[in-house]
Length: 230
Image 1: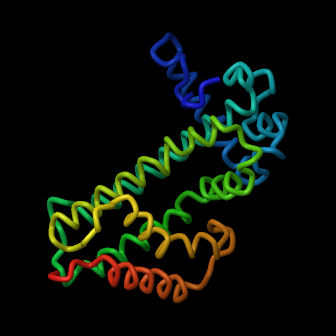
Image 2: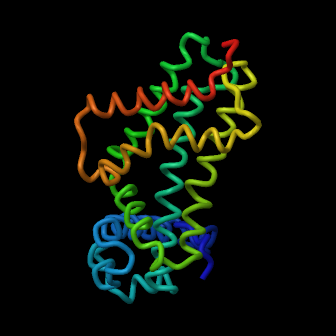
């Protein structure tokens, strides 16, 4: 099974493909909840089929590769949705055609950090799934991990690196020649502590603590990377 199998599957463009696509999306959506709750190893095909309101035979008709194929599809589908939301946030906050004034850079980066954190509330099933992916990496098929990276973290990380490069081109940041590393540091200083403290949104923390972590992370980031002339 190809790890790149999407919700659309190979039936797209054939007669009845719209109905098949709708069914696959429904199965993927229901399965995302189950995988997010049980993880990959513990989720049974029977439980996945029951959550979607279908028989196991119907599940295999749509996903001949069984649980691994379904999980790859779910991971790709939900990661693509979150990636698109992340990129839309970057475009809105760090639009290279409208770079912020130097005095507003810290404010805008704080806003971006909060926007990324807010995705946990918008896509709770996705982040529950990601939590299990990290916890069960040794049990998840390697091609599924690759599908997840290619659908979500990979392109989202490249988009953030491009956004940081845009800020450098505007004379606001000094990337020291490594936009990808700088974008990794931004996430590590702003989002990652909150992801860990909340266990990917499972146990929310008080808003003042979120504000302190994001604001402090951005301040540390700018001490390292703000262009000295900015």
